[in-house]
Amino acid sequence: MTLRHLTSINDLTNNEIERVFSLAEKFLAERGDPATHYRIGRSTDSCAGYIMATLFYEPSTRTRLSFESAMSRLGGSVISSADPAASSVAKGETLADTARVVSAYADIMVLRHPREGAAKFAAQYASVPIINGGDGAHEHPTQTLCDLFAIRREKGRLDRLNVAILGDLKGSRTIHSLVNGLARFGANIILMPAPGMDLPDHFVAEIKQRCHYWPIEGVRFKGATGAYGPQGRSLSCPHPQIDVLYLTRFQKERWPATTGDYPVVNAEFLTSKPFEQTLVLHPLPRVNELDPDFDSDPRAGYFRQASYGVAIRMALISMLLNARSESALERFATGFPDHSADDVTPSALSCSNLNCITRAEGKPRFRASGSRSALKHCTYCDHETP
Ligand code: NCD
Image (cartoon, rainbow, N blue to C red; front, side):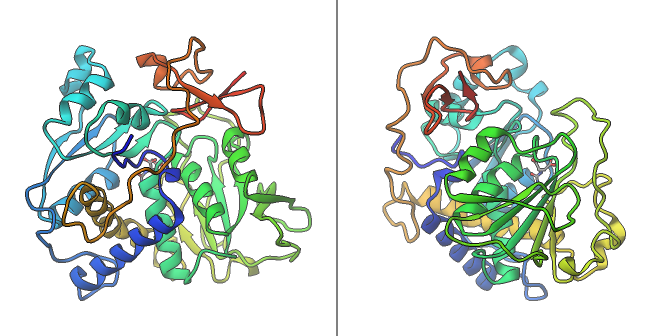
């Protein structure tokens, strides 16, 4: 893959993420709405002549519309397929064929798909950059760019912040990409899963490569099991300040309804001392887990977080497109990420994840699973198969 895609947050280096943020800041400074500090209010023509395709095979409001708004603000145009029932998917067309065909119609593609690993799979067949707009319960890297940008902009940094993550850690793709991004930028991560909704093992294994784990005992955060923080640092403070609280809805489309208690965040939940200065973020949509009465509280950051999506996606689109242009001002280097550890030939073994894209399209591929050598790591969905 010499083309740059964004299928996982790990497809970008920290330096590249910083450059996306700098360009987003530049768009906000130069094209921002003078009345607010987070809304893009004017357009440029820097991507004039380029076409972006948005292929959304699952419901979306923010991701699709902010991508389309971003491309329009850049002077480019958009073609969209937002209803699988009205596209050739309904006739049984494979994702591989769709990716090949749409590559001839657009210069960049944003894909949302119910199967895990779909974006990376499509990238094997596309001849233009693919952006993952959410693949099943796997990852949502552009939401993570918005989340990290919101945190850094509003809290001034990412390193050494205490970020509590609450709700459906099992099914929330936004959380799966976010924990990784937070670990990479040196934040402390306090996991507060709803009952039975723990972070899947393969994501825990990934954070553990960078972080130490501290069981939380003396501190009474609902559901908190422990905290991860960069190695060599102590998390000894018995009542840490929570700098950011990130919560998500129960992902009811991914799991059968559970009987457990789902947390509800409201003014009462946030009365204790550790939450005095907490920035509350949510990727939205919210259902019942975040009280609308809290919206007017200065700690509520979720609508600004959603607004940042346009500037962030403008930066990302420009950088991915300019990677292919001679006149690039801002571009990603080619050659990253390094996929040389991936088996190049399809495996005879099936991925153990029934919702992996390879369960629908075939051609499973694996790489050896780091420290856990008895396991094979799926190249597409990251699940581990014995
Ligand atoms: C999220 C998603 O689609 O994963 N929404 C979004 O893109 N902002 C979160 C969710 O649906 O709960």
